[in-house]
Image 1 (cartoon, one colour):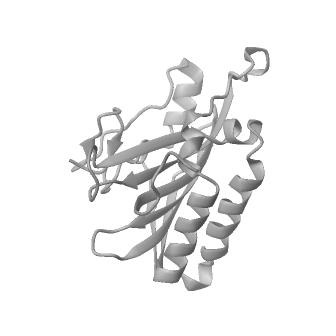
Image 2 (cartoon, one colour):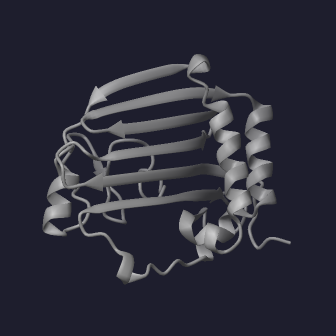
Image 3 (tube, one colour):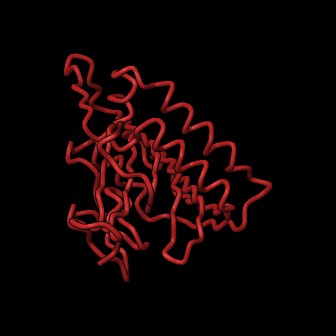
Length: 205
């Protein structure tokens, strides 16, 4: 039996990113399932490649939302946050970086104690722990929904931070956070513009 309560989920996210020293070489792909307070559920995929950002949205039926919830419960997704991955420094690349992670936010507002539980995880740790098939099952479920022909909306914009990966790789400073007008800063230090933190998933205060 799981230590986590999956009756209500606020958000599920899978993401991957890579960056090199060349300007505009950054790439990222994030797929999120968002359960709104009014009962609606959306799948949102954000792809950034170089200077271009594409945000696609799908409306999910209650049946699909419940299927995703049951899958997260079956694979005990929240427990992945307890898994650790130790990178071997001998194989660390200094002019290129990549990462793949994710998060799940459990909504406990109808229960006693804290209103939310946020679990972030490293996909490498999940695979190393022998849970790669569970991760693939979730990825396949979400990618099967994200059919370009069934999108409710798509928005394409230009980004302003395409130089950041190049500068960060050169200076070894980590990910730069470019200021965004009208944004807000999460407790984890990430600058955001949406309703939830793009890094840890916390809702906007």
